[in-house]
Figure 1 (cartoon, helix red, strand yellow):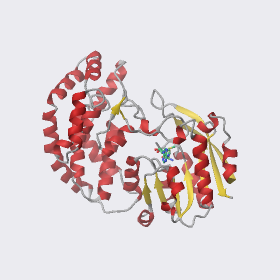
Figure 2 (cartoon, rainbow, N blue to C red):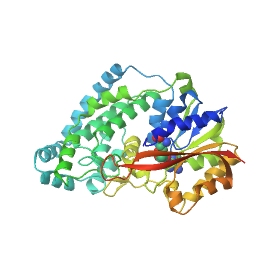
Figure 3 (cartoon, rainbow, N blue to C red):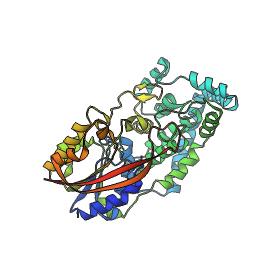
Length: 396
Ligand SMILES: C[S@@+](CC[C@H](N)C(=O)[O-])C[C@H]1O[C@@H](n2cnc3c(N)ncnc32)[C@H](O)[C@@H]1O
């Protein structure tokens, strides 16, 4: 998600020049590259519509008590170990078939992956998911296996992820949980069988893809989680973190309602700019975070209640920008806006500067050439040259 890291220092300077007297609202914060840059400039209200992004933001940008990594790992391992053993024996048949497929030919792997039932394909598994949804004890913890095994992860990995989630859910402290869940999701991100985004998993259609699947599927969940516990750490000075807040609202609703904007003196917006929906690309992390056994659909096993961002819909993007600008203007909140020269707005034939000037006044415009990795790329690491614009917009 942090494809715009190079812009962040420029945004910091623009925000600084506006001399914020209160908090800066990062409306579409993603993985927080701009929030991070603002650590010596102003407190931040960190917003993103995805719940799992909120957990990462709270873990990194707010303050709270954390236990020592070694202590927490030891405590969690004691809870995790018997649960992972129980899950391995519950799914022993599937794990044995999978081990054979991993050792076998590419065709064996292909057949195994195509036939393995999951919540989106099998009435039997859906029934298991429905039964597990209502339970709070250990037997509830099978969602990752029922939804995402034999695809994004191996079954050995999903039982480990489920057992780990059980262990994490025994922890009461909210801040500690945010940290542990972020490390858990970061672990999933490191072992996942998918290109940069997670809209779909890779299938063994070539020898190279099969090799990659085998490699990813055998990556060890617990030891990677142990590493991620140390990686997901608080950033910025502690008195800054104490003043930050994290919200997970639709940006348009947040600025229209206004009740949560007390103390906000400035906004930064880096909205989606393509038709590609973040809710599709990052659906795995959202579903894993929510652990709510949703309806599952399509080859990517998406949650059925996924709502596309209005900034990514050709029919709604202009209206969404207008709503955002109008409400910020009405509340007297200046805006730093980031948007590429060939985003969806331009593709639907609108002129972004004209649109902004209908509601606010542009006082600065900076163009920056960036390379960025394409979200929907078929292959990893596809880089595109892009022109990015930063606009400083002040209320009329
Ligand atoms: C372009 S990315 C932001 C990247 C971020 N600036 C960074 O550097 O990591 C857009 C973000 O907006 C979020 N988003 C999309 N539509 C939204 C909406 N209507 N309200 C709030 N957040 C939204 C997505 O989940 C995604 O994280």
